[in-house]
Image (cartoon, rainbow, N blue to C red; front, side, top):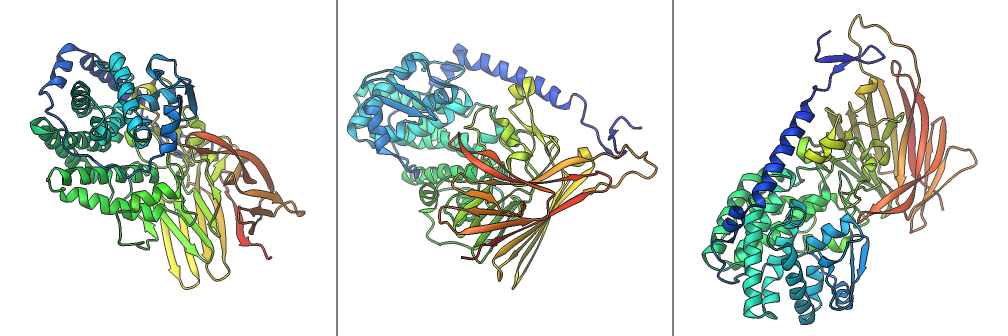
Length: 578
């Protein structure tokens, strides 16, 4: 047998995982990261960042993201709450000289995520912000591997650029000089970072916004360098249908905010927006409407959470063209079905690869279902804010099929994850979807090979009946054809399940027949989930909101499958009478 293939216990032949492929990439990445850290911390690099000296402030970039002045007032009162953690500082406390309650808190603190809300609290908030900036500069202003890491410095530059002129109105000449010097140095540093390539466009946009905020030739140089980087990456990161290359709907909306800010800042500097920038904004806006479901929240896939209506509306406030009805995002790999009071969005694409997969989930053919404007069926909604909870990226954490204790892909761990990031590997390599619409409803067939390691293909067939206002589904596991002459492996049965994760505000109960499940959301309209599974269980689950797990439930339709024979479970979601 060729060393490039391996044979399963069933006799099926699959490509073998390349020996040492990911490990070799991890070794190279670790060496490159070490060299980069040494250079970034060196005196020559710091000198290059300091020149030329900034000449003052120019534009006042507008970030359309909603702010929370009430949060800013709490900071003024001495209470700092970030990403699930909090510090009681007192009115003049220094959070940068105090141990953070968690790493997530520390990241948010050094990203300056508190800055927009604090400045929104008025002149007193701006003065407090200036004191906090001085506290940060005193300890971390020259260089620090954590504080100047890609995950911290990108957002810090963006926030500083957007509030710099507001802060300057309350600052002394010396404070303005410190502020502009900080912004120029960090924006130049941002353009030197090679790690985290999945964020390269966001870094370029932030650096260019900073260039617009800085006056004179130093600002112009940053704008020119930033726009070149934007031009190199924008068509690769923004797909033709407006999806983000990471396949995360939330990442697309957040990038839309950044590009809208950049467009506004360029206009203030009298610079025309590049055609590619305007095109990307239009595409991202279209995708944001596509991914917004009837409950007003965003669909939650591939590391993106179901962000709320207020934030979605802010991202689309610039777009007065109104909703453009779309049923598919083929480049992003999603399909939407709507009819009656039901709405379904399905993941019909393969997971991203390599660096783009650091937040991807092994959940092919996953669905989210909104019934009468209630999101009843969803996923666990894992996002990078849920630090360390990578088990929720596996197949069992979404409304799709799971086989045994395995998953249709897995995140890297250990040294490989430390060096490369938690890439998703061994995921589905081939995902196909076919759709047919007629007056009675919509058929959608999804087939993927995410379970090829157990010799099975998963096929999910959905029919949304617009007349009867019901959704019918069939999940089939079929054998992958064995090579002619391959030895038959031992006969075995594997447990498999079709899972329907419930939104935290949805409740479910099993009927007397032990099979049918009644689901109700906040509007109290009932929906029956009927099925032909061998066993039905309502089990605990979790749903992430800003990285915090909320209690939820899941409906688990159970059966068994012989890999050489296959199996199926049929189900139907229909409105309960009365």
